[in-house]
Length: 342
Ligand code: CP3
Image (tube, rainbow, N blue to C red):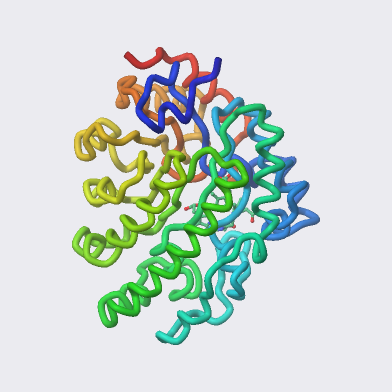
């Protein structure tokens, strides 16, 4: 029996430590690269058969305890008519970045059945082929989505989106509320189609001070997670470089917090308390190293988690494209061989 990912999200005994990897489907796989020769990333997301094939690749190859829908956080933005493209080795690029309060009107509500029927179609097809293994649905955090819309693309310092937040907090809040609305509709549709858990990728939230997070973002996240609770599936809230924000992120209302490798897991638990599951947090760069180091790093993460109920093993961020596929399978086997929680 493989460890029960959903039980771990709820901090119940899971029969071992469940493991999956952010970006477990992607360019590190030769099979994925082959598919990408003929299709763009966003085409794959909009073609349920191919999306299903790509989502299932790592499930069969690695023996992970959960699948994650192959998609991108920008998919629902595209579905409501935001013109954007995903540039290789760069990320999402917005055709006309948001520069004024009027631009918010470009974000109409998402009607998943009409705007992105391929998402539910893919989820349904994947779930029917998973034989009971849970599928994680996901969406972007409102701040992270706003950062792309306002900056126009990936950013180092987030000067424009922070500028908006400080100069016109009411407009910033309206932008985040609209994005939360879109994210909720996007996630609700995935759960209706069969997703068994949800992760919010708020990847760039760690760029904010605790004060700004609490003042400008946390209330929106609390509203979003309160609504997600009605869907009765476990939720995971993930961000990068969030060590200083963890106590506040714990107030957002997710069941589990995803943390990167810059924080010690035992320390994360100390700060967050025992009311949350914690997901993480092997450094993805370590997977490029020799196996003995990978093995030691994996054991260090497991030791820091100390077999607490509610540890979900993952990387601290996505699998890097240069990762040898076989290493991931060995990490899964090692995590599964570790003793179950006490
Ligand atoms: O985890 C999974 O297996 C699901 C796949 C997934 C993708 N995007 C596919 C993808 C997930 C969970 C995402 C979420 C996403 N997209 C986030 C949050 C997670 C994170 O990484 O912080 C963000 C910030 C984005 C925006 C985005 N899309 C970026 C920064 C990039 C990388 C650009 C690059 O070329 O490195 C993308 C493109 C993207 N989305 C790829 C994949 C597999 C790259 C591979 C490709 O183009 O085929």
